[in-house]
Image (cartoon, rainbow, N blue to C red):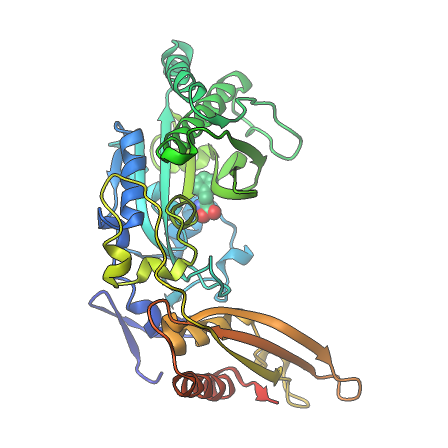
Length: 423
Ligand code: PHE
């Protein structure tokens, strides 16, 4: 758009070549679903809080942060692909919507007030469109610091024992193993004995947490729930893991975690501590626990959705009847550089630009967008793609006319804004 500034949460920011935040996203910023104790995301958040009563809670940090907060403070390198405009919402080059709750780690450390805390936050990512991806979702960060003294004097060991004993009585089957493999090493400068305790505390805490969550579901208490630790990699932790839970035949990734990089603790003025950090995605877990099959439902304002939940309880959602989908395909040639044009004046096609455009035009009427065909023309060398868009409302039947109008608008915008040549 042509205006020279963009208003986000009542503040004006100058636009620049980074600006890619869309009006559809701007409408989400003040919903704050995680602050509603009757919303499934708020219910899940509160269950996590209850499990960790001694952790300080932060849940109202504004989603507008700097790339320093979101990346540099976490030692994410300047050339890391995760910083791309294709994957993040930038307000301008200096300001963005946080893409993870880790963006607040350093800020809380610098307060020097808490050695254990949780941060619940709405986070924003440009991504594909399907039943489990939405450009806004919620995460909860957990950070636990400990001193070498607490590690040496048995305080930490005692806490580990307490949590292990409780988790052992639950229906989860997990491992406390702290063996490390090549490529997931402890940091130079860390003592292996101390880090073994930090890792054991991390695993005991998360096993204890998962046991608590799945233990809340009455019908699951008879089943065993396998939990596995997969070695992972994050610039801000080492060693690192992802925790997965086997549920209804599928391994669900529920969090990333690891031993915090000591440089982050140093920068936060807490360098005399060691620590672990974890980031949970709330939607994935809530979809499983509450039996919610489409991630868009979390944004529904329909009483048939909202009235089904009550604070403090995990109950299974009863879907109101599923309305019929309406499918539309869009085929186009990718843009190509004009003959003789400098390569840097040519904007290549990026799939997330199309996803964002469809979201903006169709809002929550779009359920899924998938590449169904592509080929390169043998003579001209041009690439063609065809995407199938599934439109469906969560609360009513859509008419073909209404969807045709939306599809027409998607087609026009694809030409105007992405330079695609429709076929
Ligand atoms: N911030 C990471 C993500 O969003 C998760 C994470 C948090 C990993 C804390 C390690 C430690 O994927």
